[in-house]
Amino acid sequence: MEGVMGNREDICSILIDGDKETVWNAITNEDKLSQWYVPGSPWKIPNQNVGEKVTFTLMPSVHNNLTEKLLMSLTIIKVNIFQEFSLYLDSQQLLMSFVLNEESNGTRVTMNSGGFDQSLANLKALIEGKEIPYI
Image 1: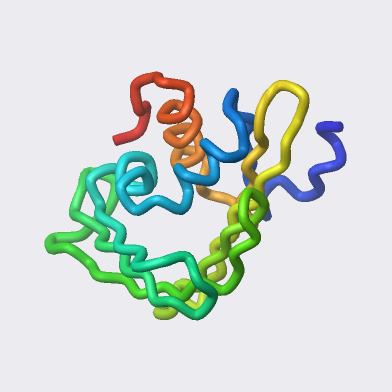
Image 2: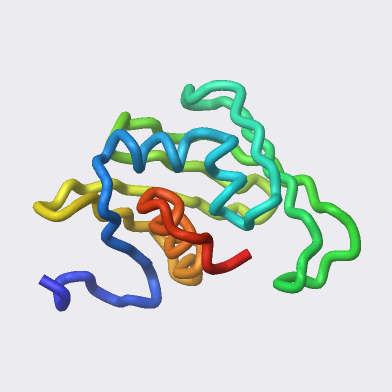
């Protein structure tokens, strides 16, 4: 089924050895998100309701050109438990969508845009109990 993914630049996905409940928790829990999505950059998710504001504080690191932390505001636009969690990055007018699909050997997480391969590799490592590769 590899060829069915379409244009690989537009999405990225990874197969994780874990159930959808565990994966869901890792993409919707602010403490877990802070461990794998730009590790060390904190998230605040008051609750998982559509329309809720979420904040993400991007901390300066060797991977970005920041000299001070950057506070970003996002809005939750879709919550389909164990299936899809979508956020809208207000300042950049960008949709970030995480879609979960159960497969025979784990859970596939697909994001709606490219460039998140390192983040997804971190998510996989966190869930599978391995060292986070991209800090």
